[in-house]
Length: 145
Ligand code: DQA
Image 1 (cartoon, rainbow, N blue to C red):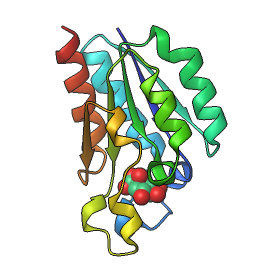
Image 2: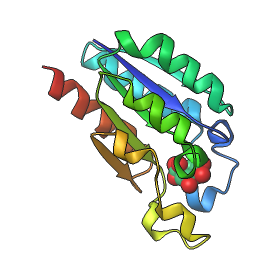
Image 3: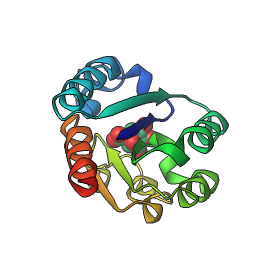
């Protein structure tokens, strides 16, 4: 079983980026936790991060067909990328959308409460920080067993 973990623009800046909102863990810290849990459950994970919509879409076209599940934090692409939504819809594997912050509790713009990509996901976890990635992975593994 192979799960893809995809992160969008600016998530490589976690740790220094608005820590009051996104916490102090880096993306590397999150990756380590996910890899540890994946190893414990005997599952392979592949991480990909890019600021570029096109690179994320190319990655999903390439790797998606062989994946058992996809965990994606599309970051700002969440709020406007119909291209990413269309791409996620092409995948047979279940997609879980994850956000570190609670989009519904953000006060810096009403655009944040709207996800154009979420309808392509089986579910969305928002506001649980790094735990969201781990819970998404547990869900995808249990669903596949
Ligand atoms: C985010 C929320 C988005 O609104 C924002 O653009 C991000 C991170 C989150 O994980 O909380 O980059 O996806």
